Image (cartoon, rainbow, N blue to C red; front, side):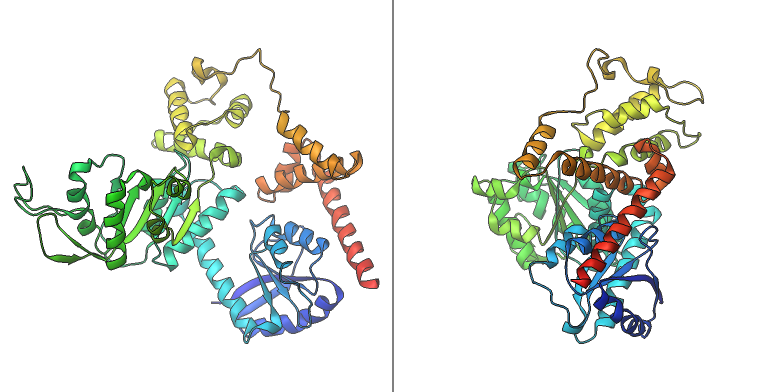
Amino acid sequence: MGTTVHIGSVGQDAMRALHAISLTLSQHAITTSPLHIDAPTGPSIICFSTITPQLCDFVREVSRNGVTRALTVAVPGSCVEKQAVWALLQAGAADVIKWDAVANPGGIIAARLDRWRVVDELVASPLVRSTLVGQSPAWLRVLRQIVEVARFTDATVLVMGETGTGKELVARLIHALDPRPEKPDLVLLDCTTVVPELSGSEFFGHERGAFTNAVAPRDGAFALADGGTLFLDEVGELPLGLQAQLLRVIQEQTYKRVGSNTWRRARFRLVCATNRNLLHEEQQGNFRRDLYYRIATWSCSLPPLRERRADIIPLVQHFMRILRSDQEVPELDDAVCSYLLARDYPGNIRDLRQLVLRIMCRHIGCGPITIGDIPEDERPDSSVSEDWWDSRVEDMLRRALALGFGLKEIRNVVDEAVVQMVIRDEQGNLQRAARKLGVTDRALQLRRASRKQLLDGQSELENLN
């Protein structure tokens, strides 16, 4: 399947190599078109000869800090320091490839682009969008990782995150995306509810007469998950003895029922979740290190809602659609949106869902949701000023001053950081970003054009030197 990719360069050497690279890529069914920094609409390739701050800024602009796929390619003859490549990943590059350091660079790039295309198509699919709602940069990065490991590997997965961040939903999505045919339903075992005296039966199953009241044989979680996925929720709660037994099953893929001498085989994908720091628990003697590395072949940390506030309103609309599946979803007036975005959510998404349920119970008619629909005990204290300034801002400014930055430099950095943050949150839509920033579309466009011109001028000056 052919792929279309935008290609551009930074530096004269990279610009001269651009045509040859494009020609090679065309032999791998990759069609290239000029990269326009103002409106990248798909994956991009950025060619370079040296890693500079200007290149990192360019990558940051094109990738929108990692939202849009951007592959950076060091052209033949480049001088690239090993440690410097990490700056490109930090700026948002999806990968860094040295063109003349691999045998088949065109094929390697084609394989990456094809994998990213499949992953992004799955991320945009109704299955994923209806399960894990949100498109903020922090959430999108996690979604891509989850989808890729679910579809293309059989690795054991450890999902970490605070209460209410959606760990069980991630486990269910991993099982749904697993390509194994005819896999059974996901088997879920909440480790906080396992009674120590019956834990063996819960996991391994038992034979008739194995213990009092064992009137019939029973399959445990391992047998039920054979051929599918076993999800252990709050795995950090397992007692040490059971941890050792679980480790053996993971390693050997065999187990015995309680009261039996017969070894049985069970092959399943293991997904574990925890709201604890398991490495800290290991240091405290509460969790086995060898088990940690067995269950964390791949791990992800789900961001709390406070780190993905751009997803709050889409989540609210999602919950309203679920609650009113047979009716039109009401709009939210501006005051309600402001309240929802400013509120703290200690219970994360579960907390937000409960709030939406309470609001919908109060809402009457088909008009928009207004502040009167917010329950009395949820309403903010009007006597308290909505002051966003706190000690963290002062700490940041003191650090900048200590590093020698002046007032003008600090102002420019803060201005640019706010602009880039809003553009990322609005998925590159300059009209919505300008409205949120309180400026005109034209002013924002001129600002970006001026910054691009400055970057181009700095690159030309660098080449002259």
